[in-house]
Image 1 (spheres, rainbow, N blue to C red):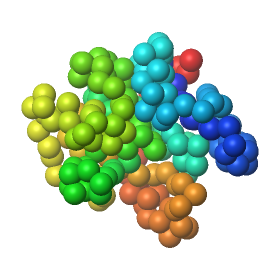
Image 2 (cartoon, rainbow, N blue to C red; image 1 turned 135 degrees about the horizontal axis):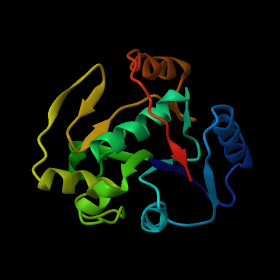
Image 3 (cartoon, rainbow, N blue to C red; image 1 turned 90 degrees about the vertical axis):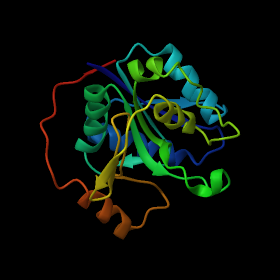
Image 4 (cartoon, rainbow, N blue to C red; image 1 turned 135 degrees about the vertical axis):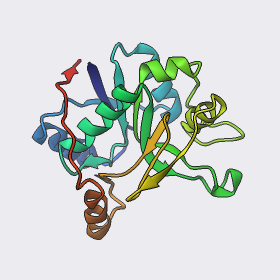
Length: 194
C-alpha cells in the first residue's frame, strides 16, 4: 500500500505551526508533505486527490498533529482495508442546522479507490454541505448503511469518524480523552510512503 500525508500552510500563518507540525511528524517517522501556498482548502484537497498516485491520502490541518504514531497509521490502514474514508466528526451549524455528521477535512484519510467509486466528488462546499461533506452525502446516496458507534467511534462501511489527534484548540483534557478512545490495539501492516 502506498500512502501520503499532506498539510496546507498559508503564507502569513505563524511559521511555528508548520515547523512544529513537521517536527512531530518527523518524530513519529511519518513523511509529511507541507504545501506552502494561499489556496482554498477544498480546491487544494481536490488537486491533491487528482494528482496523487497513492492508495490512501491523509490530509491534516496545519494545527493538527497526531498524539501517537499509531493514530495516522490506523487511519490510513482503515481507509485502505475498507476502501473508504474517515475523519474527525463534524456537523456544521450553518448548514442543515448542524445535524449531518461528516468526516471533516481537519483530519481526512481517503482511499483514492473510494473517491473514484463515489464519482470523484469535489470537496468544495455545496448548498447541502461544508468542505468535504459531499463525500459523506455520496456515501449515503450509494446505500451504505450506518452502524452504531462505540466508545466515541462512529462507523459506517463508507465512513469512520473518530479522534486521536490534537489541534491548537484542544485542551490537555480533551487530548487525553481522545487518546483514551484508542485503548484497543490492532496489527499495523507495512506501509510504503511515496
